[in-house]
Length: 82
Image (cartoon, rainbow, N blue to C red; front, top):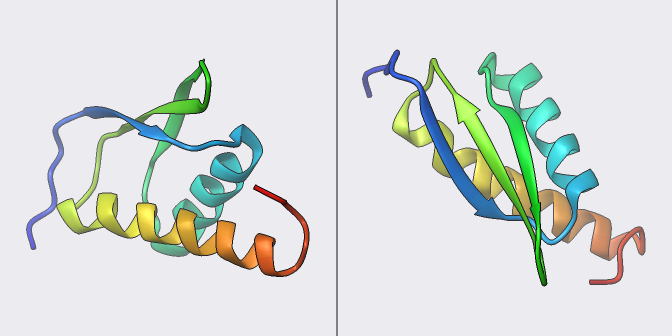
């Protein structure tokens, strides 16, 4: 899959701002990507606005999977209760 060099900003539901920060930081270190959280939107649930400049389309899906896997791991360990 080809890498894009066009800047992309997207929003995702996160429920927790701390876990998405941890997921983005870890994903960037492992996969050498440049995702960055540019804004949190606090409503009934928390949304994160994320910017990326050098990515493959699969990185966006993989980051989502990585985040939800981290949530499941933290839930199983009793670190979060939502």
